[in-house]
Image (tube, rainbow, N blue to C red; front, top):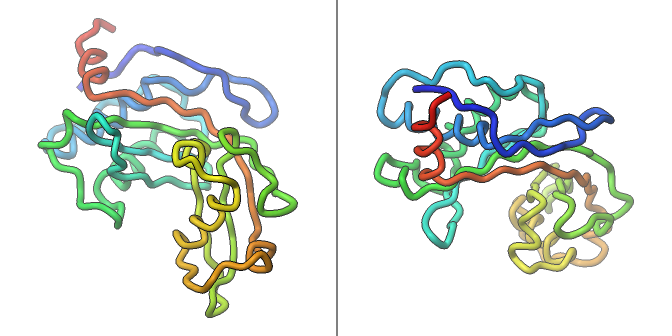
Length: 213
């Protein structure tokens, strides 16, 4: 399967300076990798986009209503070629919330790639801005075990949540089962971050494959 010419690039902040990183080619590569796996054919060749290292997430949604179908990523920096390959398959096939994606679903999918940047520790649980920051929380559950959970920057805005509703939802996502009090929220450690995101549909992926390189 062929690679793709660079399209729709955006500027992101990385290590203190601006570089043009995110592109649709990254999401095209994820589609190519997933299709290769599902149809058991040769993996796509090495992509042409940068292999710089970033924390990243790959998200799959399905249908006209864009229902979540899988989302997994890492806060550790990974070279993009290996990272997108790993988390393409993990998010599509090994998200414990969903059954693995099948060949029959492929044509109805949208793929998003998020590169995470600008990590900062918040001074409290509301020291972040809806629609701008993603957040990763750390907390201790009722048994004293440390837990973490995250939402990407778009989640709170898409759900129409306040900051407190977002924190409470993350606590539940992370497995906290006791009543959530203001005192509990004050113990939550928040790391805020930003992301550069690109989303493509299966139809866009197929159109890109048919364009001459």
